[in-house]
Image (cartoon, rainbow, N blue to C red; front, side, top):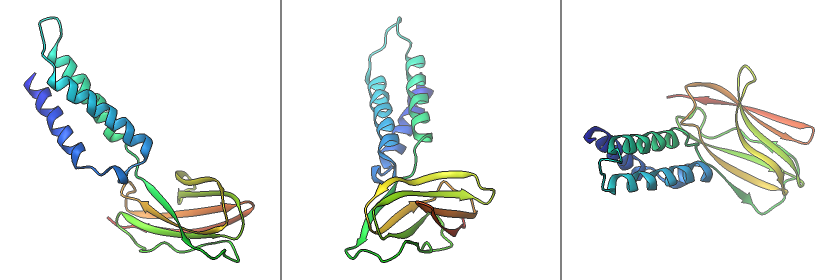
Length: 171
């Protein structure tokens, strides 16, 4: 029982250091639920009929899976008040980057937008934005800490138009 208790305690300590704003709301919610269940398992009084080791191990595995499934957050803000005259995707800054970079794009009119990270083989790795967006200038903070070192493409589709920029991750 002691091993599972200590492993669970260490994982809970790790979770407490994580910052909620760095992760997507839905994956963060799963961590919160699993962490609460883990705390309950650790504080419970066990008897002969309830196996402490099994309960603690189960809580540890559930919390571990939730932490491993965390997805980095991306944040978008409208970067200016003037409506842009043309559609564009600016080069990310900084580039190359280690973990976090900023992307800027402009929409001259309300449109269906798709902003994706793609590897050089054309495989879609992440969808950063998908859906209808108003005209404006947008700034997106991308946490690419989950990407290994290499070159990737950031592709913005607005209707039939496509803009692509190279992103370089250096670890």
